[in-house]
Image (cartoon, rainbow, N blue to C red; front, side, top):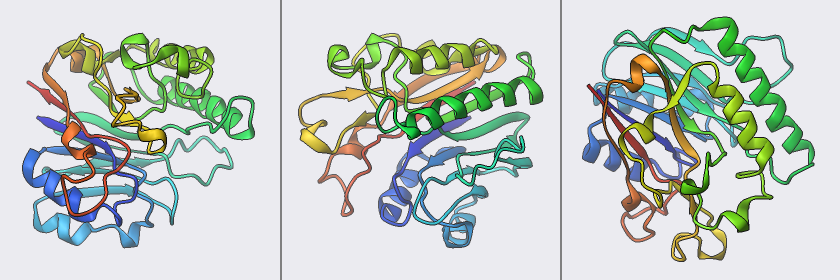
Length: 259
């Protein structure tokens, strides 16, 4: 099974680039974040022509996640269903070939101590509670998406520059560690242990051109899934401005191959 996870930063703005990436990688499963379209505007019909089923949790102009699969998606779940008054579309999951796969878009947090930062930390706590209430660490579970947190120094080109920001703040990393105590493994690191592998570069200040990147797009899985990993990569070519006729997302796709 080949899984591609990508914060596409608007499927409408990146549609041509997205379909070219599908053609090149031929993934079995796709997790998208920041689709930024309501479900009715998602290119479901065109994807169905290519053999992809879709499970969606979208909203207009902001957020939005999608799960695509070449085989049927069973038991689709949208959001945390925990009674919180939260209209933001950030989570969708379904069962694909016996594996519960989720597309996840963790809040960015904007700036530390802002209302958006507090929302990020509260959302992560809700996510942790959701896993504990709905899943088991011994089941096949795969969480793919933009977590907006770089786990450790290998994942940050300039740690001292980022350590007080929302993407690498100690409290954010602590929340990620707490989440993973459920029984999650950094699946990407099962195949690739070296540093310097980044998935996001800030549009501002020529982040990509200066090599100032972070690995904030993560694939987390339970041990039964992590033991099946045979390959992992980040498609940097998708971040080059001139690689395709449409402008790039600020994220590059992460590709995981499972036995």
